[in-house]
Amino acid sequence: MRVLIVDDERPARDKLRRLLAREADIAAIDEARDGVEALQLAATFAPDVLFLDIQMPEVNGFDVAASLPAPAPLVVFVTAYDEYAVRAFDACAVDYLLKPYDTERLQRAVQRVRERLAARRASDAAAPPLAGQPVRQLLVTERGVTRIVKADDIDWLETADNYVALHTSAGSPLLRQTLSALLDSLGPAFIRCHRRAAVRVAAVVKVAVDDKGDGELLLASGGKAPLSRQHRTAVMAALAARA
Image 1 (cartoon, rainbow, N blue to C red):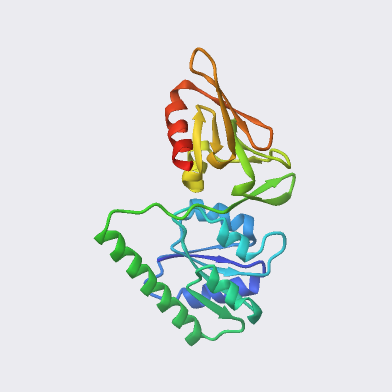
Image 2: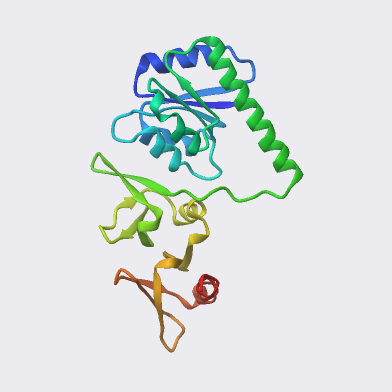
């Protein structure tokens, strides 16, 4: 089992690491000091479970959980506040660990994680793999400021060197990720319409095509996205399915 501890307080991380290190089946433990670092490590460290604090500066634990790439790791919320319990389980948390907790209570949480992981692996072995749930929002950091961009607010996506521009009515923030990886996370609500672009299917209101088969997609926001003839058939099929 691979565990990622996410907490902005060093003593809280140290305590959790010390207790988790006693569990024989935990093969690796890493730490994140905030929500932005947690999402970066979720992609590179590939944890099976996050032990995730809720109240953190800039990006809280619920926003981290909603922004995890698919297939998302399991989540155990760890917090000093009991008023978030209902919301935590609405977010499909495996457990809700209330600080200060003791070793026995943590072990019960770890056991629940073991059982959920075993059930997930058994399901994967018994049936064809299913796509993970699409992310509902993205966290974008620019000039030291992190903002939340909801997937439903994005009109279209455009590659820009090593970044993807998220075109919304409020601007076009840049996310450091490949377009292919981002489309995998966002799911079927978005479709590639050009080698360097993709569009949210629900945002398209009109298709304009020239004599060569290329064209553009007119969007409800008034914006436009490029359409290449190589991707036109797939885009038209997605629009027909939407109708």
